[in-house]
Length: 189
Image (cartoon, rainbow, N blue to C red; front, side, top):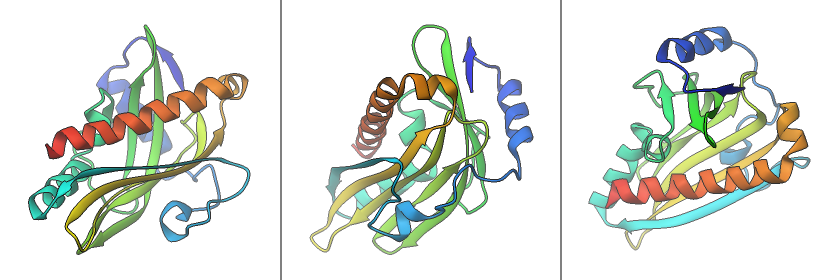
């Protein structure tokens, strides 16, 4: 949903209340985590970045995911203030675009990865979101100790403005993906 001006916390809470328990806007739930092959008919994104090496880097990267630093570190607001990383958690993100334009994006956590050397989650879009699809944010520690962030997404425009401006929307998604990686790298550093 596109809005003019920075929405209040109350407005974001109202949006979250409206989408609570509503169906996801796509059917391929878990495809960003459970398979290498992303579903056809969507724009696909895969991005990685080395964050550091060792136990401290891995712990910091996991903390960054738990505290939504990928989003907050690039100026996105996340409501509720401290959403847990667990299946079923619903969030609304306020993404400032250009000037007074903000995008509200409601998602639900659909998968959690919590293994000794991998941590993260995937969330899927709800009806108050300009796109339809899923995105996963996972950190992995290799046997060498190298810690890497992995972002995988598939999406397609859902809102008419996104359909009209599909190339611009894809560019925005690329910028957000790089922003997620930059924010997590900064958090780990």
